[in-house]
Length: 269
Image 1 (cartoon, rainbow, N blue to C red):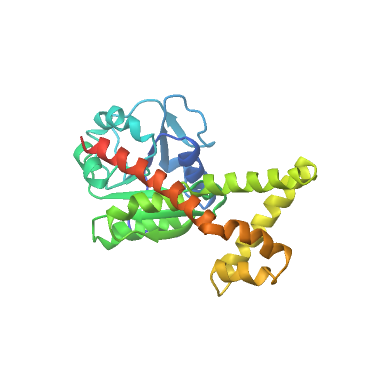
Image 2: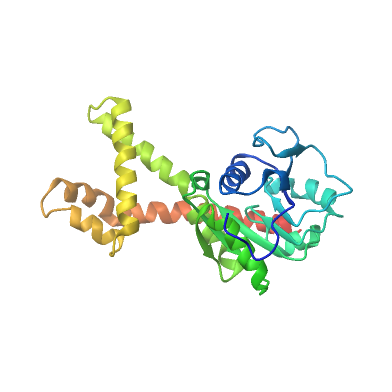
């Protein structure tokens, strides 16, 4: 792991579900010493080998870094148990829970909100970060941890966090759904289901890799694929009619952002 600006360990992770577990596995693979890590869970499931796992908060120890990786609805159950922990850095991946809401519940020298997405499991995720502090060491430490997981973006204002969560945090779910729909459509044309799925996934993987390295926007790439009067253009005409695809995704992201806002409002109470 790249050297951070402040000590990362001891590192405690509260909760170790799909996202928290994916992050922790990547950090360990990048060189984080498992002896400096403790995971607090109710069941101890999903905890990597070599990492200390407990089911209650120790009363005689303190972490340098506390990763809050439980469901947002569990915050008010977990927070009282952390009243005396007081980490140097609290990193929360709780969707919709603002820094002020965290600060009211958990005392920490600095708080960073992080929104990773599931491809962090393979080091190709996106992690959005926000903190109100201007402390350069805090920001470098949070960025060093996030950089191991893939692409990192700082969000200038916390008001944009719901939108970032809808786009990047929820986005893999929408991409997976699109991949499945593409495969189903291929099978509907007569291809065997498994073959259609393989072709759909390989097409998405190659197209995504090309879009990331291209020097033009994806819209231009789409037009380059589509010869006038050709089959690709005929299909794009369906997606482009009345901006159907754009409108569908706008509604999709708006629904996710709206739900993030609802969770933020609940956490303010």
